[in-house]
Amino acid sequence: MAAEHLLCHADLFGVAQATGRTGALGAALLELTLLPLPAFAAEGYPIEQVRLVIMPPGDRVHAYPRTGRGRRYKHRNVQITDLCLQYDRDDPALRWLPSDGLEPLITLIQRHLIFEEAWRRTGDWPCEDAPHGDDTRAPHRVITATMRKELSRWSRTS
Image 1 (cartoon, one colour):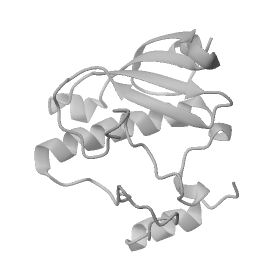
Image 2 (image 1 turned 135 degrees about the vertical axis):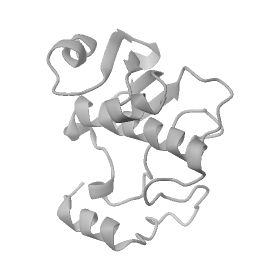
Image 3 (image 1 turned 180 degrees about the vertical axis):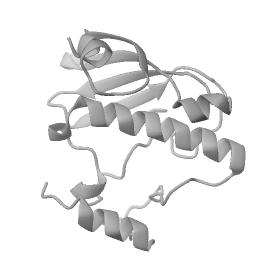
Image 4 (image 1 turned 90 degrees about the vertical axis):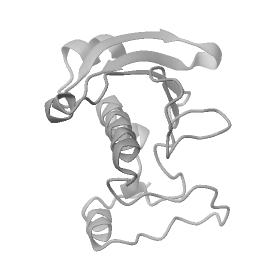
């Protein structure tokens, strides 16, 4: 049902294929084919295959790239090899929450994959990014004025 929604009813660019099923422990599994935005396609950015796993009750998600094995990633979790999409201790304004819905999650994944490709090509991550391996149990410090402005703009309660 979610796959059909993404393909036929969602106001979302780039979902070329989507299939879904229920996995172990009631997880929702979506197999997605994501097209790059036209400007990036013109620059040779790849079509991406992604397995999205949403664990019940929906607040834990894992996005596994299925194409381009052997590619380097700046923000990928080493242990379980999923994309490091967000920093769990960040302010809710900077994170995807289940109440946001499936479309913003797919957009987050697609944007992340574009950022990874940009990083592979240039060596620079195209926006402010959270550190890895931080064990302080605190949100990372927002560095740029642009990100502080966005944090204020999108402020919400968890």
